[in-house]
Length: 179
Image (tube, rainbow, N blue to C red; front, side, top):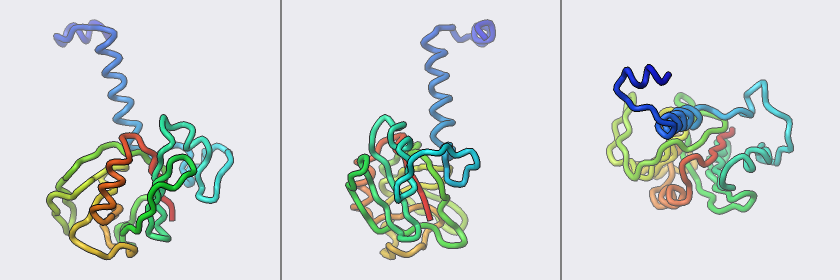
């Protein structure tokens, strides 16, 4: 490996290699569903509360903060351990464009972000937090139908509520999406 690094004109150092390794691990660990997803056949048995959250889901995070998205209720709940911090009505994905189910982590945050897809191109989407591929929790200034599934798969919140969650959550915050 060191000869490859030297031949590429990059100086080898333990700090450089460690930094690259950490970046690769961070990139690939945040964007994929986490082990223990309720649809996984290799889920580890653990105590599960009424929300389907295991104690290890919370204890394995560096912080006790996590976000629950309940699609049957069209509600987002922000938790610090077992203490409810926020509870807001959302608009999840329509039947034709569903919100993904599973356990994820916030992998990027944008104060504003342009969102594009088939049938939409929305500039300046506020308080965007991606948790899986192109799916995000974000503010929606273009509708007021919260409590009804109307999105293309993202989790829409009123802008002021999205700001609260955006400021409260950090990179790596656990996001649990369930039906």
